[in-house]
Amino acid sequence: MKSKLESEKTRPSAVGSLRGRKGAREKAALFTGGAKREGYQGSVLSLMDLEIPSRRLLTRSEERSLGQKIQSGFRRLKKLLPETVFGYRRYLQQMAEMHAGSTVSTAWFSLRDRMGDDILSATRQLEMSSRLAPRSPKRAEKAILHGAQILNQYRLDPETRFQWSRQAASNPPEPGPLSQLERPEKALRILKRTVRIMEEARDRLVLPNFRLILKEAFRYQPVGMKRSDLFQEGILGLHRAVFRFDPTRLTRFSTYATYWIRQAIRKALIDRSRLIRVPQAVQEELRNPETHLSKEEVQRVNRIMRETVSISSGDDDDEERRPFDMLGDRGVPVSEKLHTGAIPTAVSHALVSLDAREREVIRRRFGLAGEQVQTLEEIGSSLHLSRERIRQIEAEALKRMARNQNLQEVYDTLEAESTSAD
Image 1 (cartoon, rainbow, N blue to C red):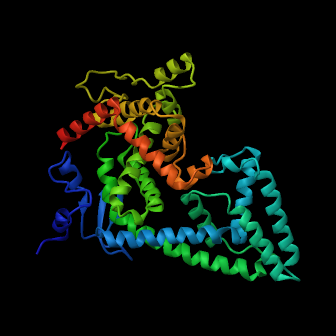
Image 2 (image 1 turned 90 degrees about the vertical axis):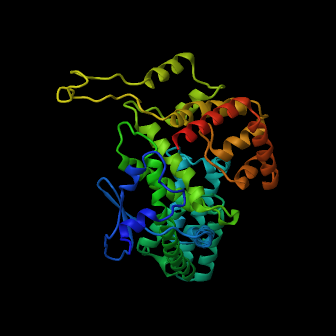
Image 3 (image 1 turned 180 degrees about the vertical axis):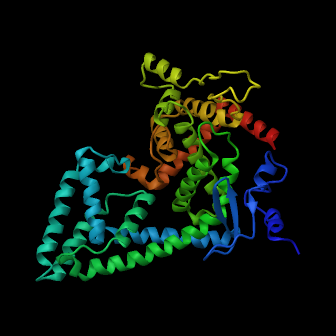
């Protein structure tokens, strides 16, 4: 009978077998079995000083079922969160901070002209509910619900909504007349149960896909970072994928999550791999043909982004006399240079060939040029078009971009480099 270690090595992966690929021995050496943890049954992936729990890969139907639970939970949280006292006050706090200019929420930009009036109206409803609670609970609950309808117009990204819901579920109820109302108390009770179900579904989706993070982390040679740091960044990307996974599109979660993991790792490499950090928004602006940066600013950023020279007090063979290692970007794969340089530049040039509306839809849909990724509904609401019309504009724009010669050449180079690495 095979040992646990042997069975773990021969277990099929959602992203393909590690055998036959570059660095296979280094990756396979990370798999260890037989570890027993209290309350956990399964193997453990070891990465330097980290011990990472790993579970069996999920089937397509299991991924779809868990994704449906999470998306159903988000729909429920959207209604319940502003009806709780904590959630109501948290909305008001965030709105007041943005109205004062101390914080920014791109999803609320379209509502900033009316935000002051909405803050005032929602605050009045909360004060009215506090006054009416001792003598007229029904009228107090109606005031809370009316204020919650105002707050529900301000959309939250999935991470923020889940974080606020967890805080509402973990914090003790606030003392006062509102704690005696039945509707907010019932909303809080259902919210706690919903958060617990979503956390269980999230963990069941995340744990089997830690192998995806290991695969992506070992594609890069980090400069100034540990691979364990890359793994942590990959976990953040994996969580974003969990909250945005749409099971109705019949896409495997492992396929969808790979792009979010890769994006999180690359963003960390861009932000933290250099001695002098250059914000990603500045780098995007630098690659934009229609950049608003002056010639002096472009030269200054390019000078900062140059490779750092080697600092060495000894010969190459004298390791004891060499206090510093090479600080430049040596050993960076061609694919990484393409993803951080040639591809964004080619995409920016391809965007120029589109008309203004198509360019705006693509930028918002894929989070280009510093924009936040938006859904079809959000873009349609901002541009006063239907969801279907936005989808049609996106499809037409992508077809035109796919015919761009520069983009085709860059992706052909990337495909050739990936084939040679395999």
